[in-house]
Every structure is written in C-alpha cells, then in structure tokens.
Amino acid sequence: MLKAILIIATLFLSIASLSNSFVPHVNVGVRQYSSTIFSSLSSRPFRVVNSQLSSSADETSSSSSSSSSSYNIPNEWKGQILKGLSTIIDPDFNRDIVTLGFIHNLSFDETTRQVSFDVQLTTPACPIKDLFQTQCQEQVDALPWTNGKAIVTMTAPPPKEANEVAAGTPLGVAQVKNIIAVSSCKGGVGKSTTAVNLAYSLSNLGASVGIFDADVYGPSLPTMVTPDNDAVTFVGRQIAPLSRNGVKLMSFGYVNEGSAIMRGPMITQLLDQFLSLTYWGPLDYLILDMPPGTGDIQLTLSQKLNITAAVIVTTPQELSFVDVERGIEMFDSVNVPCVSVVENMAYLELDDDDEKDEQKVVFDEKLMKNAFMETLKNNGLEDATMIDETSNNLLNIVQESLAKVQQAQQVKEKKQVKIFGQGHKKRLSEQWGIEHTYSIPLMTKLAKNGDSGIPFVLEYPDSPQSAIFKELASSVVREVVKLQFSQENSRPTVNFNQEDHILQFEIDGKTEKIPPAELRRDCKCAACVEEMTGKQILKPEDISDSVKPIN
Image 1 (spheres, helix red, strand yellow):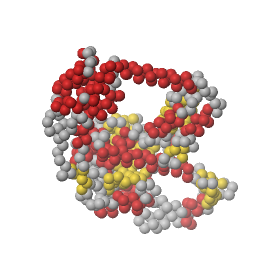
Image 2 (spheres, rainbow, N blue to C red; image 1 turned 120 degrees about the vertical axis):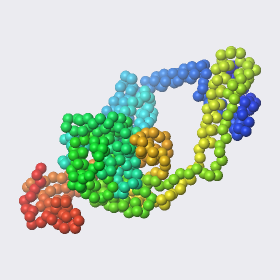
Image 3 (cartoon, helix red, strand yellow; image 1 turned 90 degrees about the vertical axis):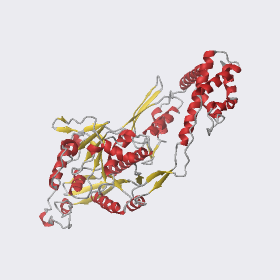
C-alpha cells in the first residue's frame, strides 16, 4: 500500500501532461490543480491511512485519559475551575462570566475526573453563546487533573411566572420577557418587512419569538407570512396564536378578512382585547409591528405594554427622516429606548457593465479518468480495483477544484446606486446616540417574498441580506441584555417609614427622602396633567398631607 501512495505522489508530478483532456479555449489549465489535489489528499485518505489515523487518535485519547490520573485532585478544585473561567469576558458588560453569575451547577466526578456545569446566559438568543461554550471548554480542559472532556451546557433563565408580572400588564403577554416595537411613524418604508425578518432572525438565533401586527387599519402580516395552519384554536378562554416555522403570529387580518372601519377609541379597545385574549405563552421576544404615526393608538400601546426597546425603520428621503424624528421623540417621552435604526431601500445593486462574461470550464471526464488509470499502471500499480478507486478519487478532486474556480468567476462586483439619496442613517445615529445602524438594499426578491407569504430569511438564509437581518437581531439581543442589566443594578429600593411618615429611596448606596403627599402632587399622568397643554389638572390643595402608599 505504501508503494501505491508513492505512485500517487509521482502522479501529481506528471499530471500536467493531461492538459489535452480539457476542451480548447478553457482559461484554466490542469497544472494549477496539482497543488489543490495534493492538499486535498489529506481529506481523501485511503483505507490504510484512515486506520493509521484512527489508531493514532485512539492512542492520543487513551494517553490523555491516563495522564490526567497521574495528577492529584486539588482540595480547592472548584476555585481553580472558577479562576480559569473568570478569564472569559462578556464583551457587552466588560466583566467576567463568573462575576456576572453565569456559572451554575458546577460539579466534578473524582472517579472519572469529569467536570460539568451550566452557563446561564441572559437570553437563549445570545449571538456569542457558541464562543462562550468553546472558551469554557478550553479553559477547563487545560487543567491537567481533569479528563479533558468538560461538559458545558448553555442555558437561559426560565420564563416569568404570572405572579412576577407587573400590575396592569395584559394577561396575554404575562409570560413575555421582552417586547420589541418596530416603528417607522410613516407608512410604506418597509417596517413590516423588517419586523417579520427580524422576528425570524431572532428565532434562528434560538429564541422563542412572536409577532403581533398592531396595524388594524392595514394589517400586513397575513400577506407576508402564511401560517402552517390557519385554523383558530383556543386555550381556555384565550385565542392561541397561529404559527409559521415556530414563530407565533397574530393579526386582525387573520381573524377578520374585512376592513376595519372603526373610530380611534374602538381600535384602542380592540387592541386591548387582542393583547388580553391572545395566549402568547412563554416568549423571549414579542415583535410589535407598530402602526404608522404617533397618535392615540401608538401612545396607548407604549403606555399599556412594558415595551423593552424600539427599532426604527426609515428610508433615505428627508420626508421620512422628519417623521422618524417624531417617532423617536414619542418613544423618548414614554421612556422606551431606541436601540437600532434600519434604513430600508438604501441603494440598488447593479452589475458592473465593464465585466466580461466568464468562460465555462469544461473537461472530458472519461478521457481524464483513462489518463489517470494509464499513468497509475505505468508507475507499477497492478491491482485493478485500487487503480479504478484511485482514479475516481482523483477525478472527484479535480471536479471539486473546477467547481470552486467557476464559483469564484461568477462572483460579480456590484455597483450601489442610491436612488433616494445619501440617506440619514449617520445623522440619526449621531443625533440620538443610536449605535447600531443598518442599510437594506432595494431588491426584487425581498419584495416578492413579502407578497408570497414566505419570509425572506427563511427562503434565502445564506444571502448577504439575511446576514444583515441576523446582525440586526444580534444587536437587539445585546442591547436588551444591557438594558436589563443596567435596570437591575440601578433599580431603587423604596421603603415607607410609618413613624416619620416619609418615603425612602435607596440607589447606588445613596438615600433620598420625600413626603408621600409631595410625590402625589407632582404626578404627571394623563389624569393629572393635560397632554396637549401641559396644564395641571390635579390641584395640590386637594391632596392631604396624610396620604400614604397602599402597600
């Protein structure tokens, strides 16, 4: 067999003589494939080579296992493991995963020297969970007294229980961890397209996701996403949302095919019913496809729901920018942070006019195989089965190499034509401090998928545009985690001192005191202050000094 391998090596040196196997006018010769074939030999080993490699791997594994038993198990093994894991830094918080409390259920079997533990991330859609898992395994496996096969399980916090939900939260969203509003404040800019593809990108990251189409006058979700089953079912007295590929869906258009000819107050009541009667169940993210504008419906949704963050969608025109500014100001007034800006229809991609058509690479497979077989025979290989198998392996390598060349030739340089102007993505980012901004091109496929009922990221998961939506989803996940972490660490502790009749607020080690009556008189809710004029409705003299918290 060693002789056969030497013959094959000799064959690589003479493969240039097979150039007559190719069709004339081909712009790629055989000679350039010799290095590719030689480098590919390791991925196409023959039987003997495979067994030798397998044997070598088994010996290495056995040697590693026996070497760990020669080391004494330290008394403070847990401390050593955590010390190694503390070198892994979360890039969003700039702190190590041990300090952040990510490590759970750490155990060590002294008999098998097996280390296992859980890494509980803030969300199952963490975009760097695979990196964390690899780093944890490397750090623990580097400890000489372990078996070098650490079991690292990536987990996330369980969903919220009903008794953990804030008062006033609609029943249907009681177990939803995060609500992400996708807003444009102007129709026709691709807000629903962004909302749908963002939802499915979050789902592809491993999160449980739902989409709620809040536009009753012009629902888009039924057109953009065809559910797996359009039959409406009930969970107790609540409506179960429809679903497509694991993402839950609900829209007025799914339950009523007619037009919504209603006044504003009726729409508000309808949305309130949808939020209360739709059983979303445990969700990591509920994408709220907001209706355009900054009116009563938008304010009601922003105040009724505990919206975690907002994604703003715009187009390059100045007219769209002006409306988007109003939307950001609305979210700012109700304390909803805007974490990303998506500039849709930012440019049109055109092929380079000066590019020449690529030449097709073609060769005669039968002629080349015969040439391989003849060369192997001339070099002393006599086994007919081995000659045939080796020739086929070499032919496959050449075919794969040619396919890569053709694929590289088909890659075209694209020209970006900004039909609607340079855009205001950078201006929005600088003016409002929004770090994450993305540009989506104007393209036929994206529009067709919006009309076909199949989300773009599902049909073209490997496209550059799907990669942009994935980056958008990752940025939303990271920003939401930052918001939650900062809120948990900056949440004040409130106590009522009955003896002194005073409210005490403790935050960051500082204590502030305020009388309950003063806090009540300073209320800025819609019942106490006119929204249009800012005029105080509540009269301070009507508030007694003896007022106190109910609980």
